[in-house]
Each structure stands twice: as structure tokens, then as C-alpha cells.
Picture: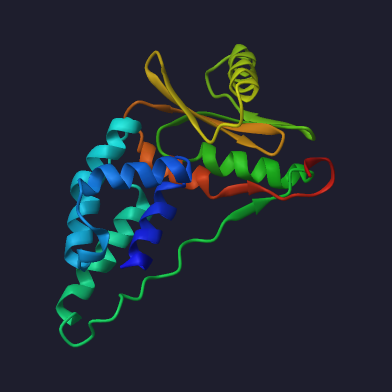
Length: 210
């Protein structure tokens, strides 16, 4: 079952560090050996203890899409386990999306796509090549706040993702290249889906971004 364990850690690593993902999975296992879990046992772990542990780290509603898909695959394989006791064959996870920050068109397309998401209030992409943003009803003072938060976090050391609540909205901010990507949403927005989507985006390592 090493393959399933790896898939779980990879899914969690979209929103938290790999080290934190391993620790969270260990807490969810509660002393159980992962080698003794069958597909159904893994599915129950993902939907139960693991989900509760994740909510303790990030206040989110719903499942991470990749974890939800993994649990679904494991449940589907349960009836076939008697004929094929080998490790389950899992679908390939969605590939990482690389964005060329030198391209104004790619930056704008990314911001527009995220801005169309349900419950999204504002999107900001800050890079050494320029800034793209959709602020909606928010003033430009939001840009100063986001930049200040990013610089403070970056000074303390590399960070993977930052989450906070601002009045009646949720803010997710993550480093991207030498800048950051920030999305402000309503409180009822699906945070798990947003974290998953943002975690798949990486800067193409070219030019000054190297």
C-alpha cells in the first residue's frame, strides 16, 4: 500500500508542506500500520480521520479534489480485490501548470480565470515582470496589504501557503516566482478547491525568475 500512502501525501502537499503532510497522515492513522489498510480502509481514513486532521490545520469546507478522487477510486476497486489482490491502479494526478511570468498574456489569462471562480472577490498576481489584478469592489489599498503580508512571510523564511480571514472574506496567498498569487473570496467559497487549483500553478523558471 506504499503507492496509496504516497498518493495521499502528494495530495496533501498541494496545500501544506510534504513534512507537515507526512505528520498529518501519521496523526490520522493513530498508530495503525498503513501496510495493513486495504482500499476500503484507506478510503475510510481519507474521508474520516484525515479530513478531520486537515480541517484542524486549514479551516475549509469539503474535500480536496485530489483526495476525494483518490477515495472514490479506492472504493470502486473494493469488489475486484478478491480477483486482483495487487496494488490498485490509480489515475495519474493532474499535471502541474507552468506559467511564463514574462508573458503578460499568460499572467492576465490566469488572473481572469481565477477571478471567474465562484465566490471570488479579488485576484492579484505580483511578479518581477509586472502586476495583474482584478480588485472588484476593493480599493488599491488591498495591494499594499497583500505585498506587506508577502514580504513579512518571505522574510521569516520560505512559506508554502498563507490563509487568513479578513472581515467577511477569506484570503489565500502563496509565493509564485519572486512574487505572489493572492485570491480573496467570500467566506462560503470552496476553499479546498481553491487551494488545490492554486497549488498546481508554478512559475516557469526562465530569465530573472531562475
